[in-house]
Amino acid sequence: MENLLLLISQFNENSEINITPTTELIDSGIVDSMNIAELLAYIEGATGQAVEVSDLDLADLATPQTIAAKFLSEGTLG
Image (cartoon, rainbow, N blue to C red):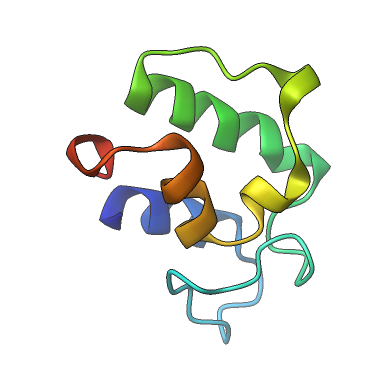
């Protein structure tokens, strides 16, 4: 989870927001259309599997916790 939180922190232009596992990423604007591709590349790299964009639900990217639950096993949380 630490690597995921670190990556998302790099997207955060408002340094006053502390990124936690339950931080709302899309609703807060931390993750936008410009960094979803980078986030998906991280997920694919961590899992070794492609993320099918056609099957992607933005709710799966709502928080670091939902990302981990949907895409990452405990061994790939980083």
